[in-house]
Image (cartoon, rainbow, N blue to C red; front, side, top):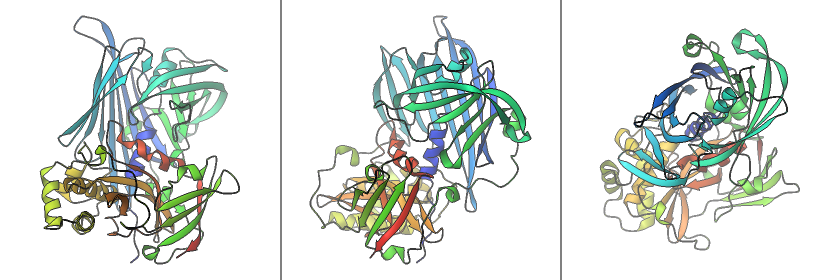
Length: 496
């Protein structure tokens, strides 16, 4: 079997992360978005004065991203809608974010009450809540843009802002550093402007830069950002333009997310689905691979001669191999807005797959095989669907297989989680982002992959992280994958 790769869950998260950095806020503005020189969409920003019930003057900010990209013969589309109610000084009082990556929206919303943001995430009939400490210094997702437009930054000046990042559900520090004036080409007409370059880096609460969120911004004398650039996904640029320019066609070839994300292998891995043990040499730029690749019962990552090098050994490990692990937490068994294990269709599918089987491992294998056989419409136009939607439509790629397996396993009483990482695809000659599952049976987390119909997952699956997709920031687990985009070499040393 020559398998193909069709996962977009990581691509979708990359675009979610890109949406945290963008052009400046005006009363109304339009920006065109390009990746790798190809137009992928636009952003529309509106800022308007409003009043609350007491007559207090407030500001409503609405930011809509509309993105489209190719995946094989299909075209996927995502809409990201961010809205806040703020004081004129920028303190956020209310926020509402919606991700439209499939038929069903994923919504996160909340209000600040007595210094606490009471957030709720909702999807497919499930909801979860979290309380986040929230002082008056906390700004919204577009704090940097609002800050620059309200008070232009000067060359040599630095500015720190406390910024809420929706898809991480975290309050981070955005650091702006103004450099010098530069002659910058704006848009596709090669118009040159003298603009101030401002470098932007977003740090987490451990004072570490967040992958994919560093960017360069070019501002005019009013603090309006006319161009921005980030290296993520081969380079993304945004340009201030008119409504017609933002909504119009970009010309040239469409952007193919899959092709841009493949890590080419120096030699082919034949019959990759039959591999049971592989030792890899991993080399990364500006990072430590032994800390990025997971070490567990199935995979070990050891430092090499330098920090940028590691050897990673991957084995196929069944339910009886190795020592027992820590018990699975409740989050791996309960439903959430993405893993809808209490959905009626999910439960019906689970019962059909499992039948009269009582052994947990055999039940898990039956679920994995049922999903592999029944999600037959390999439709790559869905960016990231919730399990209830997959159970209804029975279509999608690796991320849809994974959320449905997790939901059906939990409905059967088996703790489960989604794994994010890389997998080898022979047709593409390298490794690409992928999503599979682990089920907790016999005191061990055991890998299964419904996308490739494997209950003995092969050694070309390189694990970067695992997630229950629980909580108000379910996509945070995908951050390790962003770290490897365009910065990694993978060389198989020993293949068995």
